[in-house]
Image 1 (cartoon, one colour):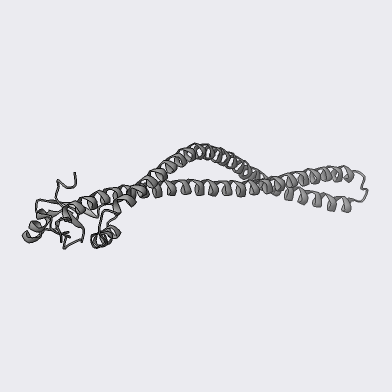
Image 2 (tube, one colour):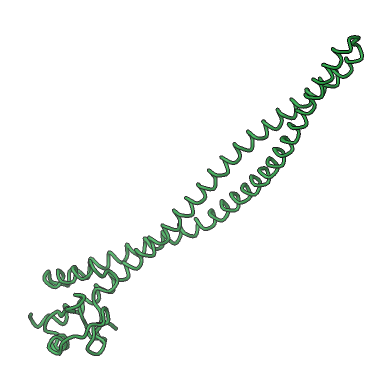
Length: 241
């Protein structure tokens, strides 16, 4: 390496700080975007659930109404048939008619018991649909508020990332291609800390002990030194400040 390595390495360190900041912004952006998508998906799922339960509720409501109406009509017919018994002069016919009326009445009692159970389930469904509607409205309100916050944060992050990328383009010009190639390989693996300080004689990225020869080379600043364990580029603690 030439005598320009220390100054170029300083530019590389500055570049790594900018890249690390941009990477963190990108991670935060992804996190917020995921939260926004998740909240929207949860609301859509709850709205779909509400629509389906409402559909079932309407069907059950129509069924209960039809059954109640049919049973009222059947009860009215039984009343008419009982009144008609008095007009029958034939004893056997009257007995047969009475038995039919009793059977029909028992069947109606069974239907009425079933209807009561149906009405009970229907009222529970009505309550569930009402609670679900309140939940959907609450989620809509919460999402609307949080969505505004998230979009504002995402816009702010995007602007800061753009500023970081502009600064990056300026710094890249001060780093030669060989040094940048080494740096890019490290940055692909470790986007938030491609260059790490040496802590004593250990890499602060993977904590591997560094041999004395590499430590001397790094301290002399005559070449770029990479950790033999994780391949991060190493720097002194003073260079990272």
